[in-house]
Image (cartoon, rainbow, N blue to C red; front, side, top):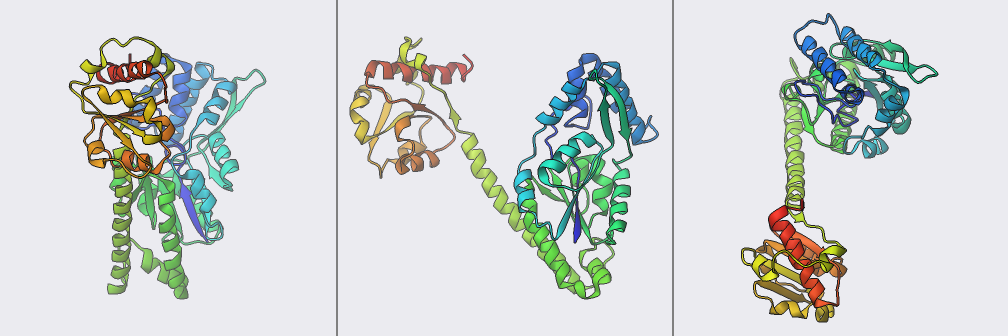
Length: 410
């Protein structure tokens, strides 16, 4: 058994809010200030400045300063609960915990954030151990009345980790893994036998041996290998494992170096696969889809279709079985009409297109799917089938006008 130790805000949950002038985006602290108004935001920004200038003696004092702001500006339970409920998991979190081998790994949450948010994650992800820096209690009128705080951020994370390691009789050098995102995770990540950064802060990236990931599911194969290597060296359990997974000062010679090199090579291979996947996704993202609505068919275009086609390489893509409803488009100068069967289109023409119109009722056919996926970084529109050629031409002209002049903002 080993501990899987994780940060919460920015790691499990997305940290979407970052006040200008601060270095710590958050899931809760800064959204609370934003919900309380501009004056609260300004005061929260000042607490960050004080922390950066070492004006607080410890993390608890910083937490207390934010609590004072929340009380001063009347934080209510409904606002707080709404922010807890609205917090979104990072990519792959739920899938990761469904696949996690609980016989091998005990998940632990240690955060400088709210215990209330940790409790939500514990309930939804089946996590037994969670330590947060602050917990709020509200009175019958819904206002903040009591709170509980503890030093569970920065160096304080290591204290809570050691407590659990001692409880389970586990080794600090070999029996746990850490996942975090911020520069407040640098201290604990630096001591981890294996550490991951979810879209990590620049300072966290500098931790020796840190593996950068964008999705939690990317961590699973590493955990499996970590466990397998521990089993392979289980004969001299504590001492041997410490040699295999130690980051610095190892004394096992060539054998340990080979293991480290194997991990490095597999890490590179995995990163290359992920980069290939991301490149494909980014290519798809570059294809701008322009919406069409019923009004586009009805209203008279601001410019004629012929004028709009002058500076664009536009292709209309339809299946032969619907040819009668769009055959008139072939007479329009500057518009390339591809009338394909279910099995063929001229993919070279589609690749060179600046804009592609696709009859929506044929998008599921394999030929259209192949055509769309071979395209370059252009734009497209999915048209409804229309038996009135004049209205169909209106739609083409209105969509192109939005694309050329308004970029969908008109």
